Length: 624
Image 1 (tube, rainbow, N blue to C red):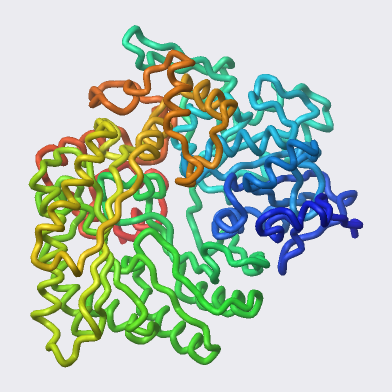
Image 2: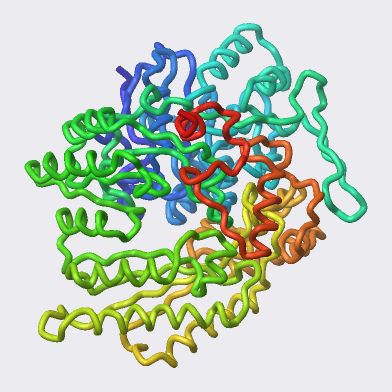
């Protein structure tokens, strides 16, 4: 086994916040003899350790890669600003946690891209590793930089920084890519030739091998591969059978508390709901479930291998998992005997869910979460939320009768078709829920007053949604709408029972630009990073003016990307990606939204979205 010494001396570790972020050696982390492996992969989550270690996808790939005898996968995270400064000053190269060796020595550096506001952290990791930031400047001495995750469904703003982009779910294609890399290494082929061959693999996109032409109005005219044998369309990779797919039964247990500090059981992928603002609901189609028996087995192994005191069910909409009742009955029995808490995110508030939560939670300490997303029924129909005011009030009434007196409500401001009356309806709904509490619960049975927390985020149109054609509000308009929400709440009878919070507008503007930008935006990301932008996902680190200055220096008008409604026939930067859901279907949903028309969910009726081409999940079972 490798002799392992820490990359950072004790003098540095004692100076920085949370040194345990950087030392590795946690329970279930994997050490291998580097002379016995052929390929080394540095897996990076471009944010702090606590957030990255909470991400299931990273744990899946880490475990899967390390089950390959000839591969050693290690982890790397963005150093927090205190260590960032020290690494630069002392000229210490960024290192992977397991071996504590420099990232530049690895064959691959892989990024999981979960949030657009982490893009400058990608550049931070590469620069601290001594890797050229632009793919065109790299040589055979540098790792192959590959990206995956939901953000790469529009990879163009970051295309210049990546050698390869993996489109879709990581369980299917990496072994083939690794074998190709090892064969090319053995042959001694050039870096470009390896990327050329890799770009022929399904689900793999080699950005530098494609040329983009722009029309006079600034939109994309065409995108063509430099080689005839490269595909014009990249089709996403999808796991057809989740029961047969790899799952990490020995996940790494951090030394310090992660954001999600618990066992995670992924019960399904995809979503039957057709919320028109939701990217995840489209790009992860079709919905596929794990069997209850498989999940029972996983739960037992995970409890044995981790020592966690909580287990959580993970999916986009856990209430829609068909085996939920059987699984929960099993978990409640098993976990109560072991003094392990069961956590239930993403549940709709109905009689079954409340009954379950009564069994697994201390009702006096918990709050219930509703996500109406819009205050008025008209707007909920526009976004296809599939939730009526009667549904919300009925769920709240049952919750109050069950002993709950804390409710969290999530809304969006700036949605397409939104009017001021829709915004004021947010206050109306909050007030009605508060009034319902006092009507439902007799004075002598109340556990204090009702506490309602209303939160608003600002709508951001994302690729592969029905709203990808929509315009965004300007920052001043977002702020005006947040103020209107606050004023409307303050005018209500039950205002003292309602607290209101809203998301910062500047980051929403930037997220919108980065989400739907084209390749020209990459110059701005690089400029912003070189002028100090980093950790933009963190409110206290974000500098909106610095970003606006970068656009001005690069001569790029950011308004072009977010402040216009796009034409039905516009070529989008991401149109070369096939995520299974067709543009024709999304355009149809955009028209339905304009008319306020509801589309049934996948179990009620197939809408012909295109995901049936993957021949798996609900698209097959619904026919049987």
